[in-house]
Length: 67
Image (cartoon, rainbow, N blue to C red; front, side, top):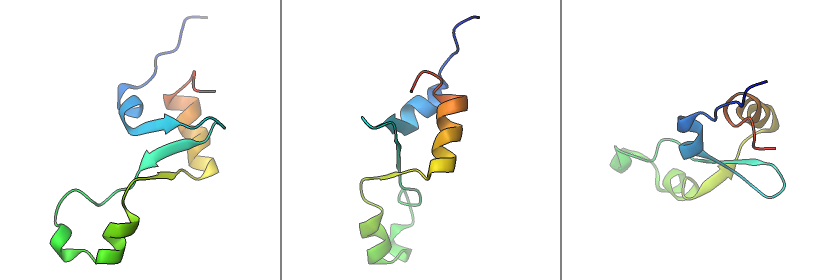
């Protein structure tokens, strides 16, 4: 069986933690920030852990060797 390719877009958007969870960036923090509430912008800092169902799909289809 040939090697599977990792999706380039997933490489840039997701990282795997040491325990195998998928870490991603928070959305809606790029532009029009003056209209968004301060507490939303504060909680959107940094990264977050994807839900288990979404993480399974990302690892299976986009990061095949990320086990």
